[in-house]
Length: 371
Image (cartoon, rainbow, N blue to C red; front, side, top):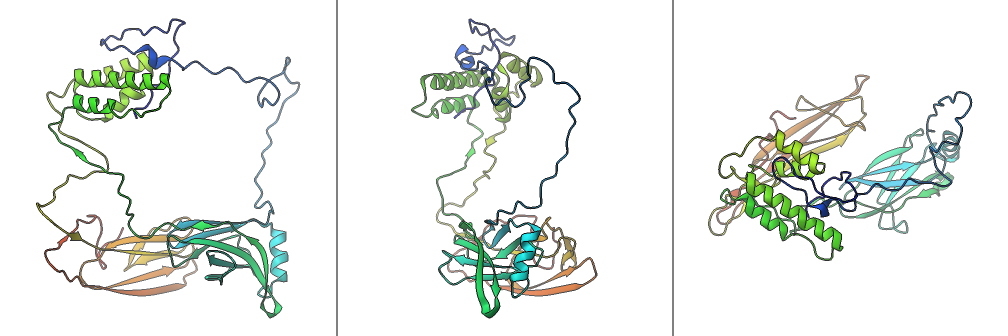
């Protein structure tokens, strides 16, 4: 569906004025763009009375409270294997619950499915914490969190239960309805304009359908006259503000590129260079991720890794065949060092002719230079 042209003010007759280049805006594209009537009646936020208010009205600066004390627990899926939990407790409420707790802090339980089952995770949080990131083992899973504490004899007391949060899948999607393609160089832009006319959806209101057809005719006519080299300039025409917008775009554009364009392709598509007959390509990547204090320094084999504001990080590496070892280090702002050494091995056994799928050229194998 082609986007609508921006509105401009017209006279009562709604006549389209000619443009210097000879391009005319169909009057139907300018219908339905009358300004909305002003809002009247009670409840106007900025409406002034018959007289100006007396005196000087000062501006009061108000800060949002740290918490509202609703006692609610919010749970959201951040990644396939990470959940984010936040509870709305005031400082007084937090201290009261900590005092009642046998452990002197709160606990977050995470259930796969419903709270009636056994908790899959149980996280003991800091006494002053109001939110926490929780690692879970499965993607595409419905999780529910429960905030509470333990009384003596491990008697569980529930403060709040969250709504369900579903983690996204951790496998490539099997959805195949969206397809991207490369437009061959020999296809003229005028032919693309003809194809655009066929994309007008059925069931539109009469005015909207007429506007869609008029816009397709307008774009197709201009493509036929100019035969521009790329589709970005078509978007400039569509975004132009009526007659003035079209004139300004035309004056800013260079002349025709001379013959056919060098090729037009969708932004997501790569040129298809597939061998003839049946083929099969495969490859693998390594993803390292974790979290620490936001002011810490994390390195992978001595190369620094940029942390997110919450202290989490992730890094993608290529994974060729062979044995690989990676050392991750975290150095706190106080000089405390933590390290973990990970070892990986990949061996590819192929039956028949199997090729290597192209990988991101910026990726390095373990032991290389990391972003």
